[in-house]
Length: 316
Figure 1 (cartoon, rainbow, N blue to C red):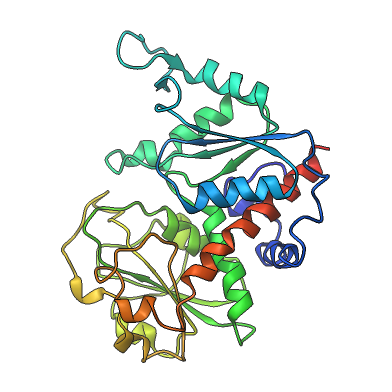
Figure 2: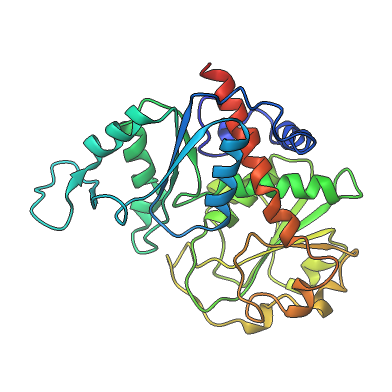
């Protein structure tokens, strides 16, 4: 693996998930692999699980880690070519990214979408500006359109807790007070479509994902119908792709409740976190014994470690 930007950098999602599960048995077995190597983690947005888990995964492999909040710990970065830099930006991406690459063996980047400029966001403008100006492997720690580390984590979690070879997995839209990106949902759809699961999506009309990510996944607009006989319910809010970045009504009745979970085949509940209690998901779901959200979050470490191990093996 030369980089990890999305599912297309992975030969087999199922095999990578199994590698991560194996790493859990001895997370320090490959500590020599990253010895005398450095990972720089760049954050343009807030993070809790991604920051801690990826840093810990790199350290498990013996790497040094440097975490930088771009724009807070560093100069404001300019991304536009030909910009006259007489405003608030102090360093151009051409120099900034190139300099960071001089200090790093692997770079992790987290950059959210604008949710106002669909063309810019769905071209992965910021991520590609870094890629153009670095000469070391890059790990996508969540970008404008996808969150592959989260999706690998989700597949790991499903495989660990599934009682079936081919479980029914439902991605359900859930309400939120803010307009959120489509990246987690896009990515989850991409990874599930390349995995051995029965996958479908349920959401109110108007929240259809970009077909580049959802493909031919069945969409059911009746949430309760979609939940029938499901083995895993994966809840996530996202704003409209068609009416880009907009919330199309409150849809409070789409909150995940225990009553709805009773329609399933004793399904496990999943969410990437953070979640707004009693807005997206009811307390009785999050606090239940069928909620996997903490175990899922713990698996972020092993997802990142599997990815970094594969990359390190190519740059020795």
